[in-house]
Length: 131
Image 1 (cartoon, rainbow, N blue to C red):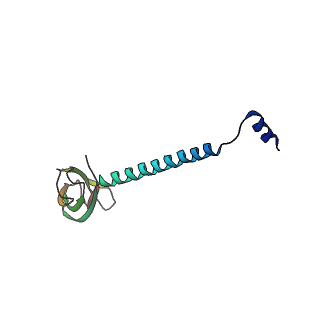
Image 2 (cartoon, helix red, strand yellow):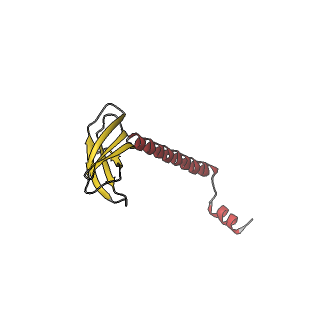
Image 3 (spheres, rainbow, N blue to C red):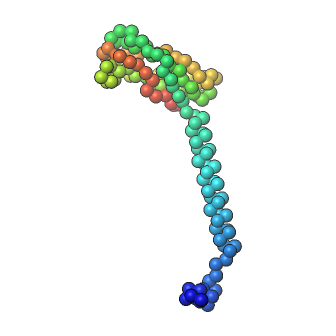
């Protein structure tokens, strides 16, 4: 018998298998709870997300660019999008935030015009969100 075992026996410090089972049960319940919370957060964030796909752009003249795009958003939620025009050096020459009212359609297509300060070479949707 080791010194530790002698001390445990003398002072009544024994390790109960019941205590070990209870500890691992609590750890298991906490792990399942955290996994469920992470899953719910992931699902709820993806349900409220807005995606935008550029479908085309047209440089009208040195002062305007027309952008066509499609958004996929939650039904019944208003959406705002930041659209941008850039020049050949990737400098921003036009920027606009457009807001759309709530709709019962999950996907919608739009065409918007951006006023520019100089000749643009591209136009695109920078980002979209639910305001």
